[in-house]
Structures are given as C-alpha cells and as structure tokens.
Image (cartoon, rainbow, N blue to C red; front, side, top):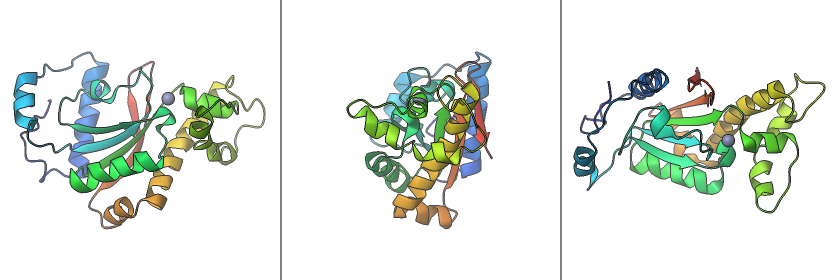
Amino acid sequence: MYKHPSIDRDKMTPAEGLQILKEGNQRFVNNLRENKDYPSLLEKTKNQQHPFVSILSCSDSRAPVELIFDQAIGDIFSVRLAGNIASKDAIGSLEFGIKYLKSKLLVILGHTSCGAVKACCDHFKDASITDVVAKITPCLDQEQTTADLRNSSNAEFVQNVSDLNVKHQINEILEHSEIIADLYQKNQISIIGGMYNIESGEVHFFE
Ligand SMILES: [Zn+2]
C-alpha cells in the first residue's frame, strides 16, 4: 500500500524502503497504482521533505521513477542524467539527499535499451554528449563475454554493458564521495543497483 510521507521515516530501515519500492513497482506493473491525495501531500511537505530514497537514474522519458515505483510528492530525491552517470554534480546532489535529507536508501537505476549505453557501444561522439558517453566507456572493457558484434546492434551486448554500467556508477560514487562511502561503511545507508525493463515495466534489483 502507498505509504504517506507523514509516516516516521527516521524509523524506516533501508530494507523497508526497498520493500516499498518493490511493492510500488508491482502495483505499477499490474496497473493498480494508488490514488494520491496531492493537496494533502502538498500540505504535508510544504515546509520540509524527508525522501526515504535517493535515486540516480536515466533521463529517458520512458523511465520516470515516481511512476514506475508508484510514489508521489516527497518520496524520492531524484537525480536523472542520461546513462545514469555519476558525474560530479550528480554525486553532489546525492550527497545532499543522503546527508541532509536523510535518505537511507540509494538506488542506481539503469534501464533496458538505454540510448546513452547504445551510444557508448557505438563510440558515438557529438559535442557534450561525448562527455556523457565517456562516463560509461570503462564498461566496454569490463564486458568480456561478447567476442563479435560489440555494438548497439547486439541487444545482449548492450544489456551486458548496461548491467556493468550500474555497478560502475556505484563504484564511482563510492570512490568519489567520502560522505556516501562513510555512511555506507557504517551501515547507516544501503546502496543497491537495479535495472528497469521498459517493455514489461518491471524493476529487477541486483541483490
Ligand atoms: Zn537511458
């Protein structure tokens, strides 16, 4: 059932947060999204926010996190960049969500058929898009199961790189954010990767 932001999120564990996301995604997949009382949510959150989760996900128009997890205002501190890349600005935003807004759960969410990942697979270059693609490029070397057809025409290769990219961005965050790495090592937050399937609507978490 949809949890209202008025519940005490200080007492919520990261595992409970993950369970809320899983249940919300099941409602989305089954077309059972719950009605949200937006005026009430606006009133509850007008002076404060306490998002239970911070999510780094892709800008792709087919992967809006509040919809696919059936959440509402005040629930998700959302950072979206093409390819769900952990750029310096993305990491700074996540640090704010976690340290100051007290999200106890951090999700790095990739998705199937990601254009940024495909661009990387094809060594695409154009203006500042090149910089986005470069943040995914290390995953090409990490992908060692595909011998031939290492480009975007190979859906399996693209998916392997997408999976690796989620893990790579988690490593980037831990490497470049003392704040997040410290809280993670002290078991005060959980970090989990996930993959959203743009055909089925399902999110698979890497547990
Ligand atoms: Zn994408």
